[in-house]
Amino acid sequence: AQTVTQSQPEMSVQEAETVTLSCTYDTSESDYYLFWYKQPPSRQMILVIRQEAYKQQNATENRFSVNFQKAAKSFSLKISDSQLGDAAMYFCAYSVIQGAQKLVFGQGTRLTINP
Amino acid sequence: DSGVTQTPKHLITATGQRVTLRCSPRSGDLSVYWYQQSLDQGLQFLIQYYNGEERAKGNILERFSAQQFPDLHSELNLSSLELGDSALYFCASSPFSSGRAENIQYFGAGTRLSVL
Image (cartoon, rainbow over all chains, first blue to last red; front, side):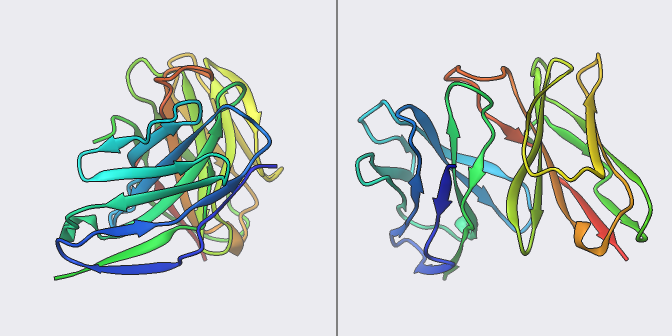
C-alpha cells in the first residue's frame, strides 16, 4: 500500500525568507503523481503544485517549487519569499496514474510565518 | 472558488441519527471523490464515483453510503452516527476517472459534522 510521510508536524519561517517542507512516500508504482495541497484556516483544500513522476524536471509555480528525488522517494516543497498568506497546513499527497486516482495524504505540516 | 459546492457547511446532530451531505461538482467534471478529515485519522479517502458508477472504495464504514445522480451531484449518507464520526467531510471533483494529466482534483469547502 502507498504511504506518505511528513516528518515535520510544525515549521516556522520569517516573512520574506525561504522554507522547505519535507515529504517522503512509499510506492511500488513507477508512474504516479505527487501533490502539495495547502489548507489555510478557512479549511479549504487548495492545490499548490503537482509533479508527474515520469518528468525529471522539478515543477515550479511562482514562489513554490519542488525537489523531486524519485530514487529516494522524496518530494519536498520550497516556498521562497514567504508571505503572511502562506501560513497554513500543508499536505503532501500521492496518487496513481492508472486506476482510481484517490489521493493518499501525509499527516500535514503546520507552517507559521513570523512577521 | 474551486467551483465545487458542498452543503451544508455545518451540521450538528446527535448520536444514532442519519445525515446527508451534498456535493455539486465543477461544471463538466464526471468524477466525484469523498474524503474525511479527522484529528486522529487525518485525511482519508472514502469513495469515488465516476459518471454515476462507484469506481473505488477506501476506508468507508458500512454505516456510510454514497451515490452520484444523473445530474452528477453526489450525496454521502452517514447513518447510526457515533461521536467518532465528527469530522470535516470533503468532496472533490475531477474531469475524468483516471489516467489523464489534466485530471486534477479540486476540493469543495467541506461540511463540518459534529455529533453530540
